[in-house]
Length: 311
Image (cartoon, rainbow, N blue to C red):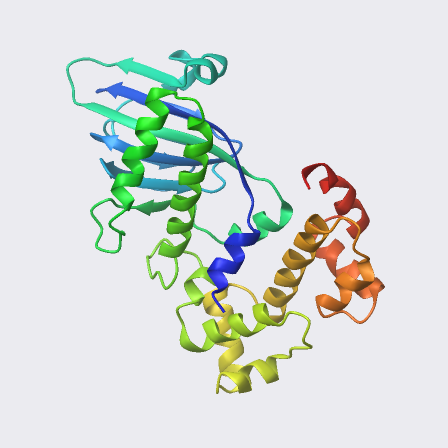
């Protein structure tokens, strides 16, 4: 089972705006971010800061995904002073023109395509909660697919030309880059990476256990049974799973069941909760409802009514 492909098929992102940032050094701006942000550097270089994380150096060809930033900064050098981006262009102006320009002087120029997106479902948020604050794909990296740079260039051209249907094209291409960013986390050992199910997929034993749970969420899995399936002792398996994933096998299984349950309710609005309970490993609607409320924060009925408009 391709766990990443399955998860991405259930994930729902909703793009709200793409535009160009054209800056000439020296420059430094603070940007608010209530949603997810992606940045594509098409020319020049800059430094990116996200919340309290160390600055990251970006160059042309780089792609950055920030799943849940509080705020972020873009500057020409680490020591440059910062100002609010609203001093250059208001939110309303950027929405209208999709362009923010600033000429700081005679320094080098930087061009960036910036996009905003939101995770439109609670189950989507569960799938990315363990991602690092910055997912940085370097355009010159050996792991980058040959099509990566041409996709960035295509997106930049579409944003610049504002042709009919351009927004739809950019949204689709950005989803492809989103998948590539998620794929890059599999097996990652970067010092800044937190434990996550993505990193764990590359581990032979823990990755196999995740595949088994995701393939049969209705099965009454136990830690003993999972450890036997991957030829490990119970204690060694439980310790490795928690170290790589950041949660226990049963916690991960419960969250995956709730992701599947949420998707079933969205895909089949009239499906009975009893059917969803059985399909996700619960013997009664009551036990399923308690687990759903604990993980999703609302009852199954409330979740269904909240999401009917999106189905």
